[in-house]
Length: 77
Image (cartoon, rainbow, N blue to C red; front, top):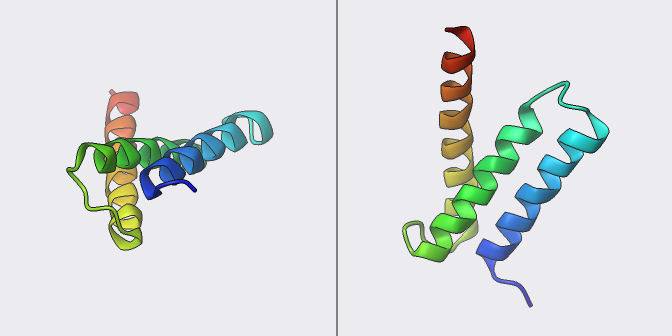
């Protein structure tokens, strides 16, 4: 029905929607996980990351961690 990259992007959009609509940006956890999932899905579409569940979870975690680190560095300056 859907491919793994498409499901990863959809999960990222849902996570961002939960962060914005339900939590009102009170915790940025779902926001960064959502962005990480969207970027990971795009990387899977591009062939940079293999299309399997383990790599999807790992790349989402790595991208979300990098975005969180960049966001905390830019907000502290």
